[in-house]
Length: 185
Image 1 (cartoon, one colour):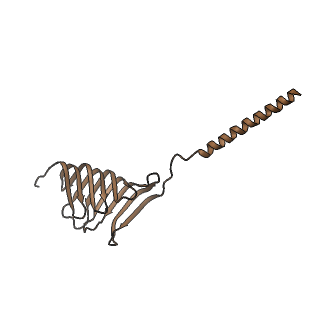
Image 2: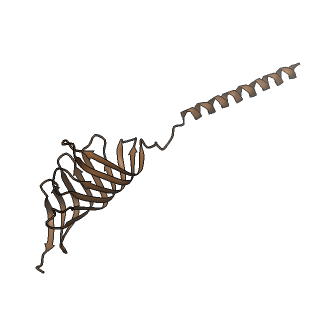
């Protein structure tokens, strides 16, 4: 009879241990959270038109991909082209490899091989501005670069560190280390 009690006690102990292990495993499964957050939205080969206060387009942004990062609520752009109309008669065109728009911000930051140039029939002097990073304050129509900038004008070249462009007034201010040479042709 003692053997029967020992066998029943052993079976009960095994059942209790199995139940305990299974319940801990279920708790661990319910605590698992996804490691990579999903995008808030994702668009491929998309265009966005921003309308100004006057009801006219302020700029048209086209990107190969536009994706919202849900963690930071930023919008990330790849292979970007912007036709910036602002309130001027002379539009500006910007191209960049990437861009970023932070939530509740009026500034768009562009990175990697950024090219900015005035376009259209009212351009008196063709100018091509190149830099690695440029931010545009869309409310004030100002573009700003803090790094190295090069400006090409009719096969002439200026370089500087830091630049501010007023897209409305069509002016560019170079901030420091300005170098360039102009020759009459």
